[in-house]
Image (tube, rainbow, N blue to C red):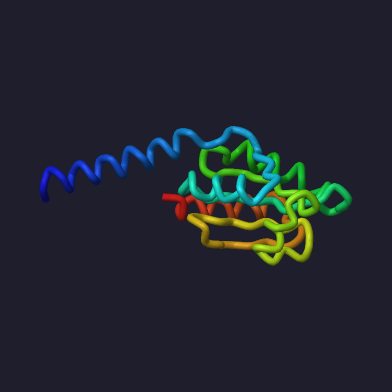
Length: 135
């Protein structure tokens, strides 16, 4: 292997480490397709998106579960909330027809989708399985 190839590998690894180190520490609220696309392009980690609405009763039940999972897994995943009334174009892009819906995306690819409220234990089990997919 040439020095040039080794340097390319080192740079790629350094870039991956930088992306892992700089994960957002809070749940991000996305309000536009531009914000969303920037997020998708900036990270290799799995992005977990809670599609929600203020008027949605089940969303109020799921909200605290999503926050608890964020507190436990914020070093592994990026947690995002999208209000379908404020960013309908993102909801349409992923054919979200019911809220809450949780989408798991990595490098622009949907790797999982949950429609409705999933309880804490089941969601935690899912995140544990997806942790390996992140690396």
